[in-house]
Amino acid sequence: MTEFELIARYFARPVHERQGVGDDCALIDAGERTLAITTDLLAEGVHFFRDVDPASLGHKALAVNLSDLAAAGARPRCFLLALSLPPPRADPAWLEAFSGALFELAGREGCELVGGDTTRAAAVGAADGPVTVCITAIGEVERATLRGRSGARAGDDLWVSGELGDAALALAHARGEVRLGPQQARDCERRLLWPQPRVGLGLALRGLASAAIDISDGLVGDLGQVLERSGVGADVQVPQVPRSEALRAVERTLQLRCLLAGGDDYELLFTASPSHREAIFAAAQHSGIGITRIGSLTKESGLRLLGESGIDATLRGFDHFAGTCQGPPSFDPTRRT
Ligand SMILES: [Mg+2]
Image (tube, rainbow, N blue to C red; front, top):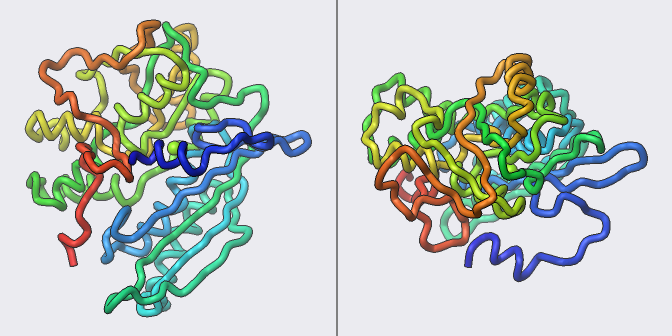
């Protein structure tokens, strides 16, 4: 069963309160304002290693939520934190590092902690229970500039921010699939453990982007969401998809896998009318984030990866519940004990 099948079968119900179903955030009208609400769960053994740096965990737990707000073009307001922690790791050093990085990012993005809950993670067999961190973030959007995944139109340009694939390359390095130099390994690991949510860019693109999503599961998988919801297809010029020098240097199969199906980049993928090109470059410059045009949307459905021959047809995004994942972000946590 895939993650989407699981949701469709057990948790899809008619909703009256919520708009933006299937988008990065639920949208709730509250008087004059529209609230964008999102939640993400990080679990030990699934999303991070047991020996994770608690500072990076605190940062990433909030960053992935702020990334969803960025996709929706929402301004972060506040968040709630639910933390399950086994007693051996509830020590002052762990908590200080975790909370320090969490509040550092929260302060930078103007987002306050307003509530939450903590519990002790019970023992499972001989081992301590796993650490889990769940954050719910709340932002505000302007009704006039609401955007989700369904607004893309044939003829729109397709854009991404930053560079893709380094987070997946860090995992490939950790698994021994590739040997990076020490500096490159550190840079890639930083992309994996300290993702930077593109909040400023998301805000600057209000009224310009017709659809947007943050790339958490890989370019192909997340673009597929936009195409399906918008009822359009896309031509992607693979050689134009931006990548780091480190990724450029690794062999082609792994490079394309990281670039096209690697998760955890948290860059923005967005679509916009070609008439907005100048305004979009200005918005990106204003927010200090690089952007690249990687293709365009077509009436003809389906995703065509152009400019590279022989791309593995099984490349796709990461799915937590599918047994046949081909993408790199799935890893065996027992490899590092
Ligand atoms: Mg998202």
